Structures are given as C-alpha cells and as structure tokens.
Length: 100
Image 1 (cartoon, helix red, strand yellow):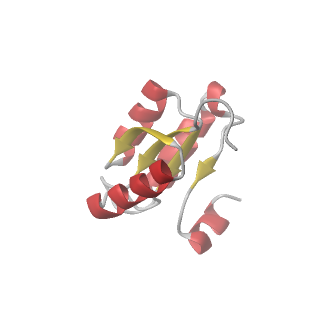
Image 2 (cartoon, rainbow, N blue to C red):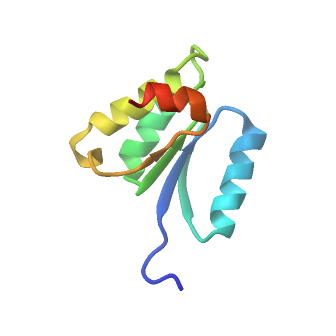
C-alpha cells in the first residue's frame, strides 16, 4: 500500500515515443510525472523548476547527442538540494562506467 504523496519525477528523453512510454509506465505505477525534457538544457531547467524526487535521464540527448544527458545529470546533482536525490540513467554498461 502506498502511503503519502506519489514520487514526483522529471523525465529526460529525446525520442518522443520512448519518452511517452516511460511516462505511461511511471504513471501506471502511481508516480507523478511533473516535467518532460527532450534535450539536456531543458532537463536542467525542468529539474530546477519542479524539484522532483527523481530524475530519469537518457545519456545521449541533444544538442550534441553524445553524453549530454549524463552531463546534465551531473550538473543537476551538483546543486546543493540534489546531493541526496536519486537518478535513473538507462543504458547500463555506459552508465556503469560513467557514473563511477
């Protein structure tokens, strides 16, 4: 049983179909999606504006399509209020190396 308010999530994913799929899964699971971002710069803005409990970020996002999502996650994480909040960064093998 879920007690208290749902977890608030910001999703960063540049592919619209994938982004909407993630949103559906999260909402069906009882989470509240408070922000969507299609590029790394918008992900930083949305995380700052909405102060979610969790950020889900793709690694390869515009503008450069390299590790922009990961760099955005690190930038968000560096903010004082984010030191103890979780991130989910799909793409296991890349993340395992990059997040060390």
